[in-house]
Length: 475
Ligand SMILES: [Zn+2]
Image (cartoon, rainbow, N blue to C red; front, side):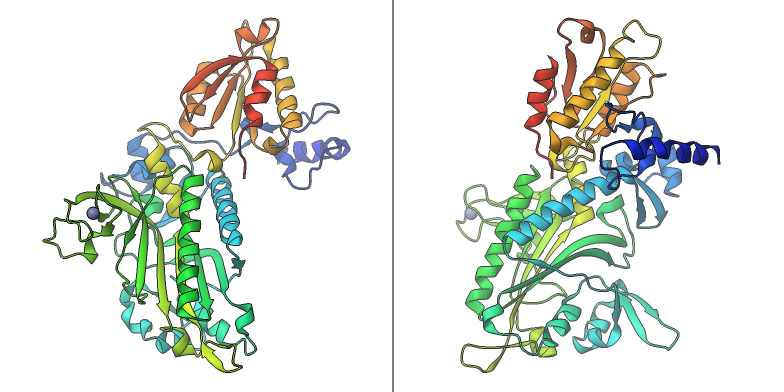
């Protein structure tokens, strides 16, 4: 209650501040006196818990099979919190990273003409009965029944729903095609044994795109466009990704590829040919095969996490739901379809799995929840006078580098030593940690800058810091 009152009293002061406040929650700011700008104060934010491994295990209700680094780190750092087996609360840092990932995905999908939709998670059984997947998906479908006795599932994928939707558009013309419709929504799968945290959950975010073309040739072109967009996405995230031939599984269709991140905890076995570009999921090959089907050279085996999947479907779904368009001759014709998934929460966890050390989270630069953590000196220390300079630097950064507004945290827990706060910052993986300590009192002031993704530590003047940060890409 007291906190609430303090906050209410602070509001008139905030309201007189000339900065736009509406896009931020006011309680995250502090010291908003005229001329001092708004600041994100770490002490007022959701604090990482820094849990020990045994505490994490008991949170998960498990005894010793917490085998994956990203799961352990994300739990220890307070990035996720278990809700029920295979389901997690995504905490503030994770949500920020995920929103950034969705923005990168949106950019890539819209560059190739994608249009965003949003379909209900609650999916009526009759759609799934029409494709016979109500039975063939078996126990993976999370099913439920409403008060009128009508059956539904919580959608794990939306081929049925989107094809029925497009079929309802009676005036669709070949001139409108290709249609590339996509969404980023929660998906559900009744995993028998959810594990590895966000890597294999029961409820997760996926980007799923469905494409509608006027001919098989046009659909093939769309297929390669989407694959190129996926490659571009992983390049921008700085993640090495292998595109492999894959099995069409329960989705069906004629051609399919997986995008795999090579990692030890990966559950997929892949074969790659070092001499040519051939690569495949082991399940698509004869298990006794040891040489490359393309060049006959020896194959090497690796493990991967599937982060994307593409399918060329042909008319498998459009023929069932009668998804037609009016062709160039004025006649109705079945649409040629493709479907394309990206595991959004899975990409985030897999990136952490690939990039982090045993003790410290590392993010793809574009996805880091905050780009900069600024550490002023400890209260009562010899360098305390540098606190003012840290505050000034904060203002200069957010004024001179507009893309960093909302991206700079001030670690105002000044009852802690710089060393302790640096340790926390290192564990959470802010790409840039800036310390105002003894050398900030030099003339000119020098700040200690930790570039965490390259491992460099440099001393820079204010101008040097601004120049370095002006090159940071923020999505
Ligand atoms: Zn080969």
